[in-house]
Length: 190
Image (cartoon, rainbow, N blue to C red; front, side, top):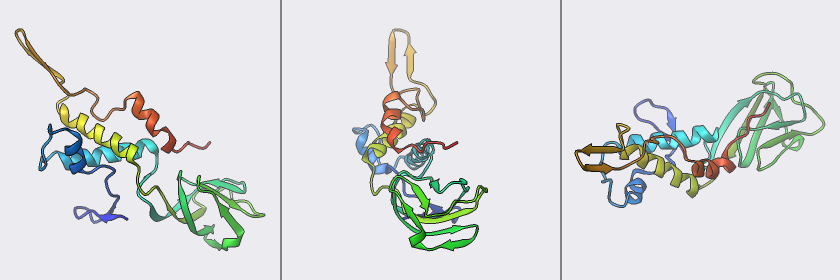
């Protein structure tokens, strides 16, 4: 499911984490209606997707154009393919009995090779996960980090009194976050 962004009139993916979830995860430190929540959730969702190199969730149908590999197998930019609806090679439709695909994002032509040409393969597919609670938790944490210290400050001191809060991480990743996102990250193919 995609939503139309009313500002630019373009399709926009649903957020990986909602403002309501970030408020709940904050343990009362953030309040519903905080004008920064929408931007922080949008930025955190975009940051997770950018790191993973694909949209990850939810399941969507889209048509993608990819470079031909010159071989009989092609890597699609997805880690979780639900269905391949149509394949065109150099603009010519390929019948469903002439290709097969894997959930992991591999597309194979039977008895033929993909041309070794840029943008020569068009694939209409359904892909993504219905729900990714681990990535939603990471997006929530990243949004909370950004909201905890919006100016990058994490400590103030006046004489002998010192107060520390938040983190200087902003939209940066901790090692544990990177480890949790690793299974969702597309590998760059040579």
